[in-house]
Amino acid sequence: MKILIVTTLFPPDLSDSSRYCKELSKRLVDDGHSVEIILYGKIPEKIEKAHINVVRKSFLLPVRLLIFTVKYFMASLHKDRVIISNGPAVDFPTFLIYPFVFEKATYLISDSAAVTKSSGTRHYIYSFLKAHLPTLAVDTKKYLKPEIHPFKTSDFSPEEFNENWKSHLRSVINYG
Image (cartoon, helix red, strand yellow):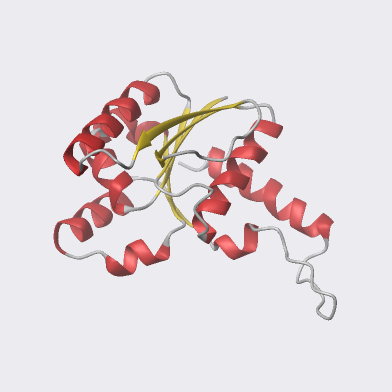
């Protein structure tokens, strides 16, 4: 399956949402899917066999949004599934090209900070997308590799962790 992941956050950004998007991309590639990622950044971490399309954050905001929206639109035309990780810089372009992506989109709420900060127009766009696209709220901590501490036991065994991901991938791809 040809999959497009659209996100504002991706490593080397340190947020849970960025680490989640990287792990999601890597696991989709490992499952044999063709994955393209469109993101804002400078030098994102690479994922073997995934195509990463970067829009530089150094551009002025209107220019950056225009370039991102055009790249997003063009890439979405040739994909079977579009996975959208929420955030204002992704939500606005999604809102603009909504008629072209709604049938193949999954809207992931992986950045809860973006939701709590939304107000006015940003909140309207977020609410519209949440109401009109298949939406999954993602607890990113559940899908990040457990840290190893010498005096603390992990919440998941490696097998449980991988099973959680397999189930999650099925829900993300088949949702909608």
